[in-house]
Length: 126
Image 1: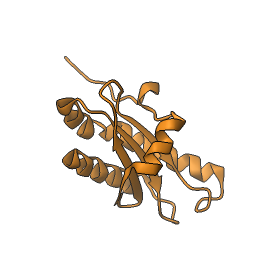
Image 2: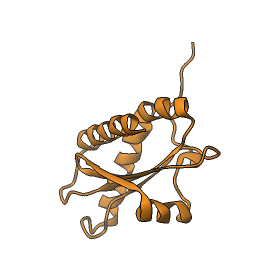
Image 3: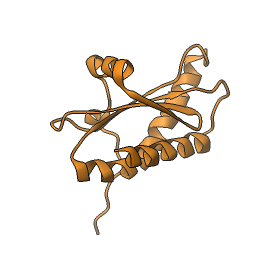
Image 4: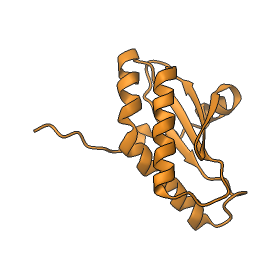
């Protein structure tokens, strides 16, 4: 019985300031539901990485921002296989940055739907 675990490990998290800056300078952007997605392809020696953000301007309380980011990470963790199957074929990693762009508190179903749409769209673009 071969069961693959759905995890979101440290090497899958986008932490590099250099890469994040290059994403905002020269990355591609599209909107998916309540999310703004900024993405860019990377070098073949790196892995696909993702980062998540909820703007302080829209969500004043840190508790709310953290809840939204937690929901985004969970939705990505459960749906990342959609993108990973396409990335593995081409052997080109992708850097992703997800930003919530709604003023209303999105529930998990809304975020999950937006993440799945974004990953499906991104799989088609790569």
